[in-house]
Image (cartoon, rainbow over all chains, first blue to last red; front, side, top):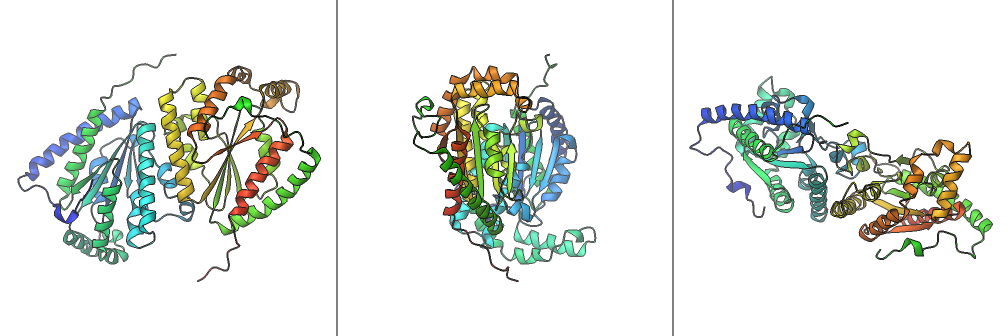
Length: 249
Length: 249
């Protein structure tokens, strides 16, 4: 994925798309996803890894709630990666990631992921470009391992919001009592590094290219949810899964 | 490491080596190792992974007991990899391996390892040659990850015994009450596949070559212990470690 310029990609739904119709379609997609997730679990041949990345307030948590709440939690797991604990930091950066990889039959969501190790670390100059490239190589190898050796379908989504939308949502976190728990003093400091983050993401898209990213216009939740649910549906339908018969013996 | 022919490599110590002198040397080496392990732990910059492979009764357990008992168990961990559990089998083959990788400051021993997935599985035709090659590629990538991203020193030892020595030791497991707990009915069946195992090992040495293997003549325990302890000492000495000073702040 060379030469992605995030500034040139719209953060909004196509203008001719009808919101109500799209929401209705989403309802149908979610019902199908529920069926297919059940089949994925029963068959236990494939696994699915969904990587969610995006700036603060880009709507990662909301996406998880909206799209995955309707699936059987026995077959769906979410892992939010925070700043590494001291035990995690005393291992290679993929150690904690690998431990959370999906077993066969499972859908695993990464709310933030291995990519933070080439994003936030890079913006804050905790690693140099050479280390970032080496990490990207390691990430590609790691994802190939999952794909080749655990039948993992990997979907990577970048929730693409505008800086204006982000500011609005961060302000809401201060003023809306139901959202104040999400407020973090450092969010506004991080927001000032917007351009640096965009550059780090663009470089990441260019070099972590074994499994392509989907840039999801994410200023409107209904469109973001529709795009991601549709992509997952397409992936699951392609697997051509079947319920296993009675076990022999 | 191309064209290793195990049959052509002696399983015994060089004839001119004095056993008693070597044992004395080993005692000195173990004392130094104890000091260096303490330094490794205090410094917490590097980590060490020791991979032990070998046929049944090649002396892996004995090696661990002899060489590592004298080190601080807080800094040394041993993981014996058995037939995968159903949870382990529902992940890629490196998942359980990665979880056991050493954190910085630690010496980790693998008693059997990731290599079983290109050895026993191959001899029993559970995987084909193409899968074996893909796994070897994945193993190389994985080891590179540990080396580059967790300062891991990897040492890989193949305990090389003769089929005659193996038969003798397996017989002893039947007749020696102190060793009967190690006896496994399938051991003699496996022993019949000797040539297939040798071929799988040779192929493994040839293709898993990012970190070279040491073929350790292992018919005599005193020599095997000396070779491995010496190699570890050399590795640790090269690290040029220092006790960290007082922490700032």
